Image (cartoon, rainbow over all chains, first blue to last red; front, side, top):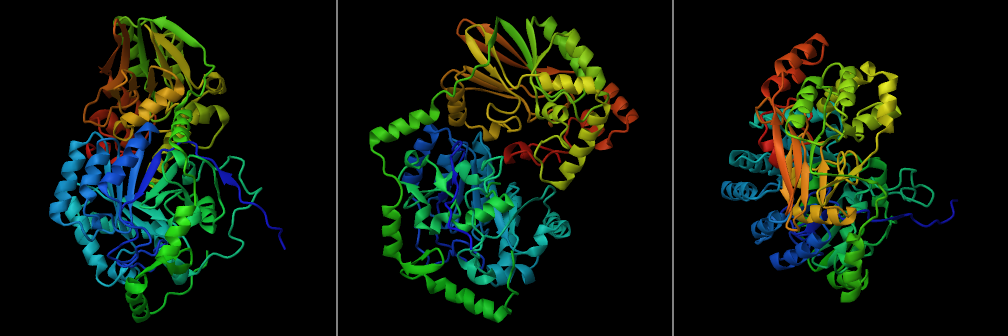
Length: 290
Length: 335
């Protein structure tokens, strides 16, 4: 039996990427693989207001943050989301991770106007879990495939080219032939230059029930730090703001131990990679960035 | 990772509906559902809560200068700076003439001598003849160290396919002497123009292959980068697209673009930068440079380089390596 060993610590090289759990854990879907178990009734984290986001944007500017990411839950359930994006795009590039269900033509037009008015890039990332209803809907909910496509069509119609994000719950997404099916679908919708991001699965939250939880060996232990260091881990360059403070990364928001402080200045220190999800990031080189 | 076989659809639907309401009054804590209050109490008790003085100290130590022993060259009153030759010896010859005609006292190259274009060995004599002062790009780092790829960091298989063709060609056609010389180039230079001290790097001061695009390099980020590197300006390349930002602090960041291929805007000319000392600081000019691009295209075809590359030279639109472009730069792109 292996003796209990401490987890290695990751230092923050530079705070480049600041995440906002802007939709809290509230979502209009309850996907079976959601690693934060978001649902209409999950208020583990509440939405963040424009005033609160602005306070963090000010602090972030002093630290020279390079880019901002918004997730949830579903960001567009937040009634202030467009105002939050406007405030953000005044100081840096923004990425929104959305399920695509609330992207009506009016909103898409307003998002395009926000993007055009800024010096900085706005990227929309729409999640799907299959290239047809038969593969997507069991994960994301009945009827969602068609509604996601409608959201994507509305974005494209407004002149925005979203990044389609697929998790490896869709096993084919990890293969070239599987990716080709997504590209084919997107091209058939009139997207000349489809953009696709494939993410591995975190075996936590709802996904632990669906696909199985981590086993005890799936942990990072002292001495397992590669020679190149831990710079490949996104926690060496990011932090996550929720309504309850600053967390180390977007993955560990359902672990109180992932919380680092009340302000960004509180959260610049090292973090022990003590969670099995840290093992996934390490082994698969995960970055939630676009 | 192992997955359990998927359950049947009805069972999944039932579970999904259950999940919609499972959280009433509860929070997810790792694998467990706990009363909301328990989670919030634990979260409130975790992490640091520094005093206002401690926070101010943490912020200023984060942005403090990192110290850089690189010797300072100059001072000059006017310099020319360019990047990304990509074997385009015809544009390089044109640049040397143009910069000299415009009174540049020194000419700096920010790296990426090879890739994309034809006949790498035509580049070093021109650099020597023009007295060009160079730094290493990721291409030089890779070639000098015998790396298998250009380390551009693409993930799209199509981009990687063309990046590989381009790297292999340059790798095969560079003499060992040229490669060894690349390895002797410094990774950064500091140059004084008038009273301004400028830091010259390939990608960014932090990483040789970090992309500084205009739409993803916000003002606060650049101000902190300048603070940490204790300079009045940063000159970089690597993205292939030129831009200049005068910051609220009065300092400058200039991506000088590349002379190896056009800037993905439908024009066939390429770009470099002229910097001139002024009473009140620095004048930055991004200079378009026309050259014999049909001649280059013909030579690329003779060398058997991909028609996709030739098309870029002839049309001014990129056909490969588009994956790296952020949304804004990509929206302006044809492909």
